[in-house]
Length: 241
Length: 322
Image (cartoon, rainbow over all chains, first blue to last red; front, side):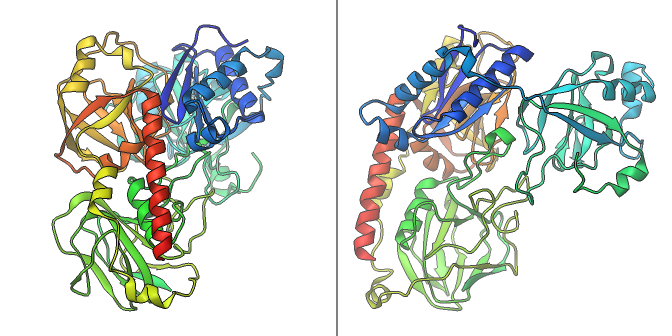
């Protein structure tokens, strides 16, 4: 059941944010995704898209289409009422968390992991042990954002947490796997960034040339596994993950 | 049936009204900065508002038509010349093959738009020809147009003889444009974190001047003004942002997110520029000063509907001429 204390406010004249508190919480995030699914499964007239985040759901709509269906009321009021109806609907309507587990190969070699020294200096944990911890955890994709295909992963073991670099790099290559504070993630594109890079995956998290340009979606589970340099270089990107 | 780029401009991309429906993948809409201009230049050549256009910045470089074409320009005034003859904005022009177009004056406004009858021949990426520079996809090879690029037109319908003689003789009136592009204030609605501002900060937003800093581009406009204080300094978990979202940075300064914004962010969203005023803001340049005024979301919606009705009237009037 969605918590009863929530904030509903316009993000623009064609988007409404439902805020369920300022927390990173697995159960709450699952409920956010369930609500997003419910709205997508039976969209209202004028609905364009949803953007689920950690503890909020933003619903975008086309005011012209909403007004066409409900001419006499401001679209904001119409959509607000519709969203409140979705929320108060019985929880049995919500099905979510197909809990898809996506396994991502990572080469943790120093060729790709440029920041092993800093990670060791901060954590005092050896490279082998950090790899063991990093690959043992099953991470949850709480949300997608920042860059096309970028997953906000939660659940990293705090023993390997390392602060961001004081001086961000101008270019971190696509596929780089990094740690930033208590977060871990993968760069889907070449991008400037301050994450401590510990490895690289040959798998594309974003590939505009395919029909499904993005590998992950909110709610997926992710686990990394180690590959060596030879495997990395010979990785067939078409191979199933 | 194409445009040839003779000289590279500062930032020249193909854009349309944006790529909707992919935010939950981290893929933002992109699209034109100034939808009033893109809509009107499209109407002037008989296209739908959603057709792709070229967005030029200054300096714009130089282009050459490789085929006779009906074109229209609008948005910023770059003092355009076609083979050394002045080429007015906001009019349809029938130009012959070989015509070269370039800017000749210090720009008034920030971005110039060009539509060609029928639109450009480009493969859509996820329903749109908008260029996503960061992901290097969409538009023309996912990048800005450069010297020696050739941008093809779609197959064009035959022109009516009257069109050829009457083009360049009529256009959208200055009065209409002034009504569409208001210049007094930039209207905003309160954002989800408006109440994180102190009462004093809320008053500053509505009464004081903000300068558009030189750190302003298609991603966002950084503003300079009196630093704003927060009631509470809680860090926020990331949530959705959109075009027009005004975020409060830790320094107390504001940034207005524009067409190439990220899909999510963690700074307080104190307000949002209303849809109808985004085009006017997109034409403001670095070092311009702006004032905000607060309206309700219901008012913002009415203003956008009114703007839409004005577009419909203009489209009908232009259709009669074409």
